[in-house]
Amino acid sequence: MIINHTYRFIYLKTKKTAGTSVEIALSRYCGPGDILSRIGRKDEPIRTGLGYQGPANYLIAKDRYSRSDWVRHYIGRQEIMYYNHMPAVEVRARIGEEIWNSYYKFCFERNPWDRAISAYHWENRSRRRLPAFGRFLKKMHRDRKISNFETYAIDGKIAVDKVLLYENLAAELEALVVRLGLPGPLELPNAKRQYRKDRRPYQEVYSAWERDFIAQVCAREIKEFGYRFE
Image 1 (cartoon, rainbow, N blue to C red):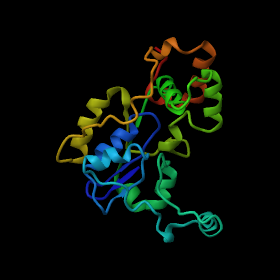
Image 2 (tube, helix red, strand yellow; image 1 turned 60 degrees about the horizontal axis):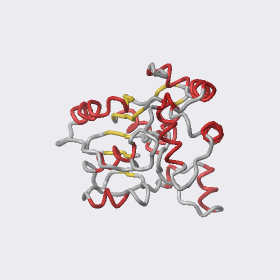
Image 3 (tube, rainbow, N blue to C red; image 1 turned 30 degrees about the vertical axis):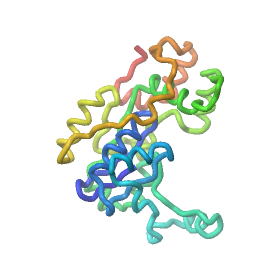
């Protein structure tokens, strides 16, 4: 996730929505005074190679610590930090109401049936043999990794200024450049795109049960953005 003080925006990174590529592209317009969480060890060299700002200021200031943070810090020896896929409710608590309310907040969303297929290949990228898709969906649901809704919602309501759609990625990025007043385009690198071997349309992969399972688990984003299994 990114909090940019120059262009006054907060980018929340959702799952399987070209998030790492967008994050790297936005890093081009960040500086050492901004907040940038760490990204994957295979992706960070891409950002570094482009000469963009790397992770910065991601440790939470101790005056923002909660009681549980202090317990984690002293007993668990953990550093409290901004992190990958950090949800809106936590970012708001950390950065404070003034910045949260005055900065432009945005993220991306994607058709959840398509997104789940992408997650399936990503999460099983090191396996020689893929597990059954239905079993994978159940596990992802237990781990709260299927739906993106809680990343950009607070108390069940969308808390960002704009949810951009992955399906209109190029147009959304062009409009975002104008909205943020960036001095140049957002050029996406090729990050995390090499793991999906099965390129069939997602409709050909799902059983009826699996289709209905996603419809239930992701009902909020499906309703909000009019997604359909088509």
